[in-house]
Amino acid sequence: MPSDLLSSLTSLVTPDLVSKFAGAAGESSSSVSRALGAAFPALLSGFASKADDAAGFESLFNQITSPANDASVLANPGAWLADVAGGKSSPVSSMAQGALAALFGGRTDGIANAIGQYAGLKPGAGRSLLSMATPFVLGYLLDVVKKRILNANGLAELFKRERNELNAAVPGDLRAALGFAGASAPPPRDREVTAVAPAGENRWWIWLIPLLLIPLLWWFFRPAGPEGTMGTDTVPAMMPASGESAAPSGEAQGAAAAAPAGDTAAPAGMPAAGATTVAPAPLPADTVGAGASDGAPAAAPADSAKGPGAMGGQGAPGKR
Image 1 (cartoon, rainbow, N blue to C red):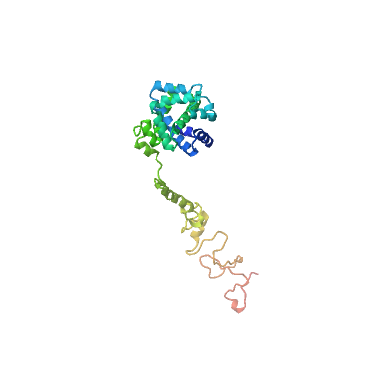
Image 2 (spheres, rainbow, N blue to C red):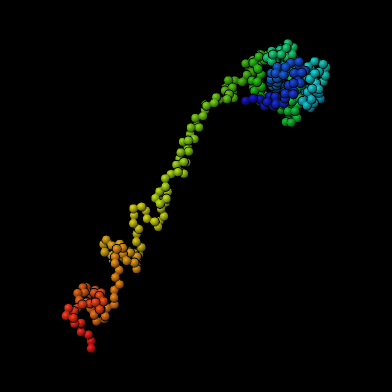
């Protein structure tokens, strides 16, 4: 993963700042932008290399917090860029030369030349760009110290945590000049962890989504049971299930028992289906039709009953 320190530093570089650096160095903006992309990680990596040396890092911390390194270094770089680029004596120029000597010592010229070759600068322009980049890095580190309220040990620990990321950000042509070519680079395992997987790999789990949705869709769209219900297990207790006959209640059971086989029990007061209703006429108390069996009287009207002597035209003798 990229260094937080380097990411925050490069976020401060605007097209206007690059244009000012290019004007002071007499180079194109594209070349200067490439040179700063190499100088910034090289400078931060130099600080990280001194983090284990308490005395050496204390000296660097004093240069970061010196009165010459104030807010104007970041806010108004145009005020000091020309002096630093031209090698004129000034507080900011002296601060930059002292920091480069403490960071790189006798390797400063070799590092500057490597930056110039990497960015395609004119001969000698690499040293000018490195000298201009140094005050900008010192101003950024002062801002970090103030915002995080760090002392020398706290800033050293911050550089220790990001040492591998900073070394990895240094371009290959500059690594040998810094003296850690290959030795301080992140191990292959770290590079594999930070590599981005190509598109289409590790996407097997996407095919599980349709399989997980199938049971859910079946639940919502499963077929309905009889009478619009969702299966026979949801039929109310008062309704007979399909293929069963309703059990008769108490009175209906009695009526059904008295009815002849094959007849359908009808509710009380209503005739059975297909039966003809005959309203019986009242019989005289002393008139009993002949031929009644088992005590059941013959239901016939008095004026239409015909006895055995009716053929002779004589009516039944009445009481006198």
